[in-house]
Image 1 (cartoon, rainbow, N blue to C red):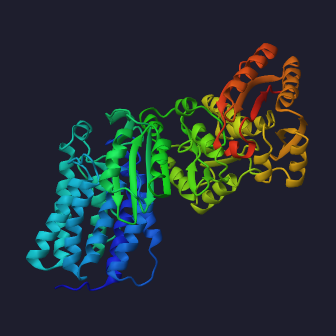
Image 2: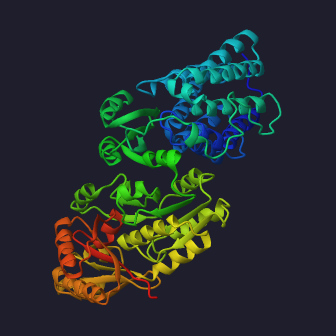
Image 3: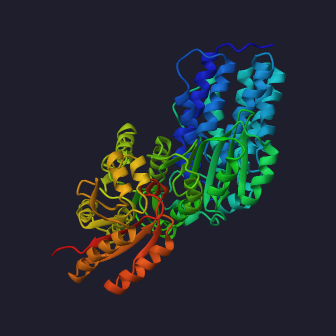
Length: 598
């Protein structure tokens, strides 16, 4: 049996293969049309490979440990269809290798046997995808190794055959044939095995990517719009979850989840499973999964938004905000706004604000008196978004919740610095606002950008608008503000004893401030109404908006009164769970934009 000559050599080869995929990210994004033309396969595979690289140290690895490390990192970093399939393949390689005596022959056998697991991870595996190239590569690797007993020869033969299989994907699916493209995920797999092979066999690693006919390197950024023929996704959200120690078997999970969407892929092992599904209801998927195990990871991408951008990008300037900004889902999609979800912790379970937790789930959890907290978006979600936006926009304007109320602003600032994103491209603005007031600022930013002014003028106008936006909140229950520390415990308990209901606003720096109160929420709202009516009589109000925490009837009634007294019809929005946790059930808020003083 042939022993593995050097584990260091294997480690270097894995890293070289991963780096070649990372280098090819933009090209893979451009040719992504299956299963959805959302232009993110390159970003997804690059995320997978970057996680693997980041997880590997300079320590000495046995082959067994190296494969285990790669497999574990792959499950965490995997995104999208091709990423999950790739992760399942790498996990299966690790599992098969660990069962037998460790040598090169077993490694080759593991590479071959793991292909079946990759196919089994899908309900309806399709040829002409990553699977086809994976299968052909693994088959030739095994056959050649048995004939020659040379791992180097087997790698070189398998690489050449994978190249042929890749070119054939252009003719195996109608969508690829129409667009005269090879499959993006398949090409990503080819990049990995070619980089791995070149490193192991000592060939040049100049990072040069082989050209695949047809050659698209000369085409410009309008390529997707002009050449891709594809359909809009049937389901809006690409959703992924990792469930630890699942009480359900893989096949049982497939049957339970398949009715909730399409593109279902389940990968992993007995310890943990990663689930990928395209669905309109990610919150329902999480609600099911949390009954069957511990969910340790979740990611939800708006595929419909990605598709709209790939087909008809409305501006060369992207707007990014966070989920504290209350905006309608339709407005977000129509104006191609990117939203970073805050993390919501309820008891032992985490949620993504406005994605895997909705008002109904929030109310259910709230009424169970479970401990609820919020935290800024994850580092991975910020990095992944910037990775997706890179190369698609000339400028990115990020409008964050007030830096005085959340660590979101500081986190994004740190990630911009860490990733060495050019300051001339990404522009971070502290809104000094939250909730529906922050939403009004984002809406104004959309309007300003549509006027096609220079970026400096756009940024100045957005900054100037911040001082013209106000918000008044009438709290129904003081407990959340006391528990979150926004009101000192002693003062809060005194206010509760005398049934005091505060009115909260924001100061110029974006700190919460108490501006009044009453002995009932209704009286607090009366005081807020007087302020709104006074501003209206002076002709100062340009726009109003309302938000509520599970109090829609009260918000509708309030809107009717405001409309009667000011002739202004306000948009009514559900508050984010992040706001609900601090303001409490039944809270109502009115935000407004004052007219510019000439």
